[in-house]
Image 1 (cartoon, rainbow, N blue to C red):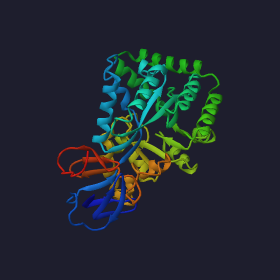
Image 2: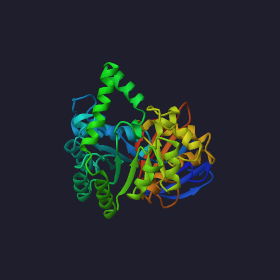
Image 3: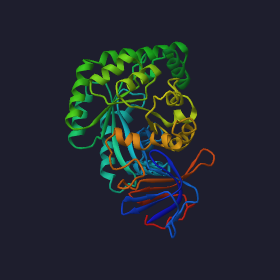
Image 4: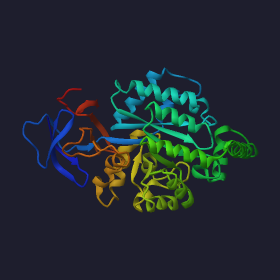
Length: 389
């Protein structure tokens, strides 16, 4: 099957009138010119590798769209699948948190989070996107180790990250901003907001236990099973060094330029949110993904909480990337594939999986169709795909 006359985004350049041939589930041939009798004529549309999202928080809100309003798990997971494929994501890591004392309540309890992940595992065969699991563990809770070991043992987890949302560090290092946000969200007085933030700090400290021992045990477990380990919300050189020592190979959402640079120097690729890059700023006042990219400190774009931001973010970053659209596209394709060990995907090249995105650049950009393993999993109807769904 031939797809002809596209702007084909390769790993190192863009073919302005390129074509590719798909055999079965893989890319068999890439040429720089249009071909006659193609199954699909692109007429200048973009043809990109399918996006690989290593951190998407959406699963929790699909299962429970409003507080204490539970949807059937099957419905929530189908909705998640739909959101991802319409955004061009062909491989998605569902980021599920294990944090019983989170503001999200039971959504991030151990039992509820395990239930979501196991349901996702059971439904993988009928969902269209290649769904994988990114388990996020709050380091202050000693029960994290037991859950990590349980989930890894039954083959549920593909990526583990270690989080610490204690006020005063990481994402919430700015206590003044956190207090303002708490006051606004809860509709309480300044004094009540300050007391609420201090209560969170006290609770975290009281339940921390021997944090380093827990982290070391989790790291050993991940290493023994070949599971990648990521740090989260790194804010200092010292934290980056500690996480590197513990075996982390990826720094996701570094909150300061200092931490992002330290991660780069330590050989740890950095991942940041596509919504941050699209908007040009972090919603919590932390490091801008655009600034990180301009300074050469950004390796991976993740959906974070909004997968449809990936394509627009790539198009925006392409304007300043030293390698243009090819370089910006790598942030959501070949770079996460390399870091996560997905050697069969992430670029348009012979022998790779035919995971593809057909898109235009009108406005903020628009995904027209998504293919996984050479099969259409989404189309908005604007392109005539003469191929099996």
